[in-house]
Image (cartoon, rainbow, N blue to C red; front, side, top):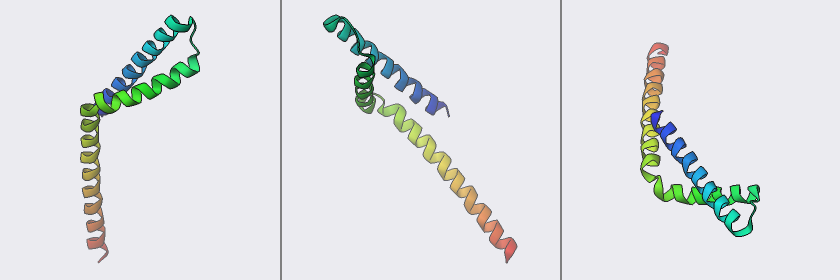
Length: 88
């Protein structure tokens, strides 16, 4: 689960950084920040940024999830085989 928390933390940091940039630019240009639109723009920016910047952590998370799913699948297969042997 370490990979999940690393990826989630990096996404949060990227979002907060994007929000800070958007809000800062908006204050410099307009003098006030419409928070809703700043959040929406920051969300889009961080989503696009994470696609390129967080590829490594995302792949590490995907590998971990795949490994756990394969282990669970093999355990289920073993349980089914045991049930079949016990029932026969």
